[in-house]
Length: 398
Ligand code: GDP
Ligand code: MN
Image (cartoon, rainbow, N blue to C red; front, top):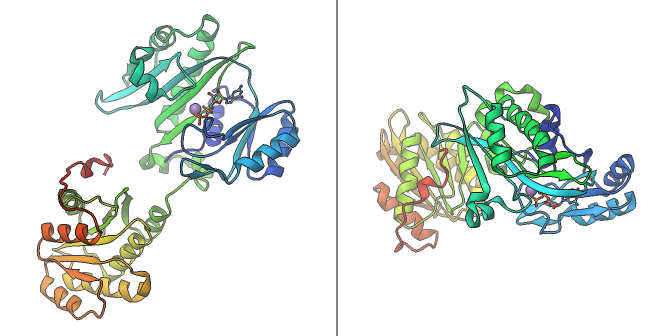
């Protein structure tokens, strides 16, 4: 779960990480009021969970409250690389002497944490990594030992931060590490970390990804939760108690059991298609669950066909079929895409008979998993000629 910049900075501030004074505003009027409260020149920043806001015009200086209002008016509703800004962060403008980069993240390969620093901040770090990798210092941190002063020195000296920035930047890194561990973060990133002309060191931007699985032990983050940007379908699935993950393809997938769903992703990829999601209805999938799952998947406008792949064990094929029919009934004309269904195992025969009696022309039976995938991909209008096997890794956390 990613935080917005203003939430990240709020979290930083709680742990003593220096950030500019400021507050979030949901309307131009509110932005004007915050600017008046702060006094002087402010910066109005679009709150979207995507980088490159500056270049897109989503970050503007305003010399007085009236100007802050006008800038907020321009920014709220603005589309930045596919994300609509619904709120702005209004904060004291800073006079920047130098822009740095620091981050702390999980390093799966190294089985620990990784801290990074660079004196080349303010630009996209991926660009620095590609063109000037030596400008980024990486230090492995053993979670059991934590971030120690020698790590901090390696980072601030190694990256070549200005003399007058090193002390405060080191202090800030230690506090950032505290944020990282205390809030169970997957990532904390500050780009840019600035040295101001007045000699202050501050986090001018903030990116925080929290570990969803650890959220339950953070009631203190609960207040941020209502404003998290959650995907609509993922939210709907959660409310229905479904195990759903959205991917970026166009073949909707429903299966029972995580293993079967994952192999279904693979065969869809093998058939040249791209999966739109991962949906495991689990063991003992009832008609109710099936209907709920289909509803969630069909609400994704990118879905052009659905592949239902059920292997009956505890799950009964006839109940699954009934669920599909119920869902078709309930959704009626909203079902505009074909549903390729492969049933096997317990009561599969009964299930297939039920489906065959369906008046809907949307249900397409398939005998095997591969045949089902090929049909689903074909019906989605995609080419079946191209074989790719990368789909299953699209979301490494599945
Ligand atoms: P991002 O482009 O979406 O990552 O947004 P950032 O928050 O990193 O801001 C982008 C750039 O805007 C920074 O690197 C700065 O150069 C500039 N910027 C942001 N805040 C201020 C400010 O208070 N004063 C000045 N002078 N520039 C700022
Ligand atoms: Mn940034």
